[in-house]
Length: 394
Image (tube, rainbow, N blue to C red):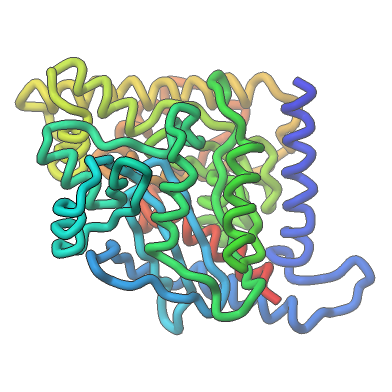
């Protein structure tokens, strides 16, 4: 409990400054008006209204050196970079995966010819990003992931090196040394394992070594920052990702409650794969391409996907009820608050409706006004991180 209180205190301190200087209008403690802060705040607020122009990292495309603040979402499934452009927010993503193949001069020439993204190890080539998934599908195997259940994998020694290599395919060193970059971090696992402190620290060191000034934001809070400006940053942000579902109850931009549960999209892929005897990578492709949760399933794979989506939503809402009813930290909120769903696992059609239906069966100590799906679920954490980075610039 002591560690949980320390974590909450740290989050409150971090966002006390965020609220007073950024979302709260830029007024300083001394009462003096900082014009530069006001300008940063206004640009950040304007960014919340901009549409996201999303791209996948193309094979052979060079990374750019960013000019201006950067938002970075290092998720279990994807790594997404967001930057503010004149009329939109540009996001570019890369699959957070790798696949090792034996090292030889012949295979190296083929990899280079096909512009496959890889880096060399002692006895193997480490294929990364979307190229890794292509290799895994060819061999009817699963690709490997440097992040497991939302945190750096303790079983993959190459994990951090893989993340560094993938980030380097998306961005290079900034044009201006010390440029602000904000990256998302998961909440403390409710009943799971892994160290958020270690995860956050090693990523921060890596980004610092690239010439950035890194700050972190809780992933659920990033959803709130991106989607709830019209609600005074009050509500519940839920990021349903690949390795974790991250939850944040925010009140006037304060992350009052943050936590995560270590089941999400990868859990669904794995459990469905075991049930039907197919690789999780194949199930993931079917889930992302064909799943419609609003329709009755017509085969065993779709049936299994429905079953495990129901289980995930039940466990997510059960955790929300458990956490909110067992704390005395919830402020007195006079009006109902919204829930915003985001993340790749929330994207299948009908997911929001399943969540709404299940929500009716639980009681929470706060009244919910609506359940919304983020405008761009996959890119919302990176957008929220970018908005945070914009308030830190300069």
